[in-house]
Image 1: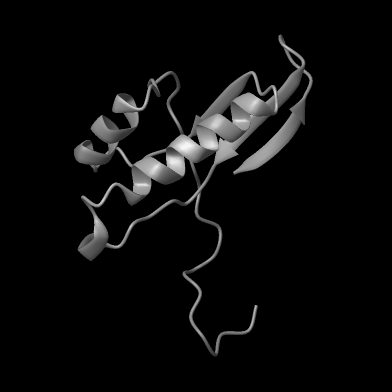
Image 2: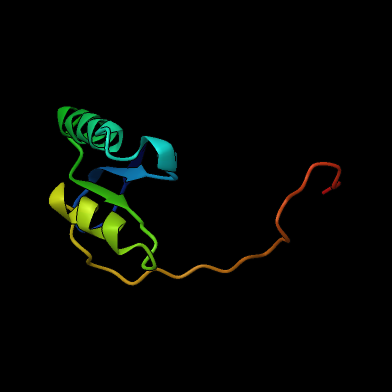
Length: 92
């Protein structure tokens, strides 16, 4: 989790969750739920006014999981890939 100081409509802290993945063999063990509940608690305890994250639209079960935690789809995300996927032995 990243805490960001922001200046916008509401000044304060904004938290961002990035790249959480649970190995397919470990899904269903509530590991992801525990991680997110910890992050939500930590963000609240720091006075964060919003906790945001992104999730792949192609994974409806992940979207349902995030909604069960209280997240809501509020924005449409966009991205642009600038570099070819990294592989060992490649010099950047």
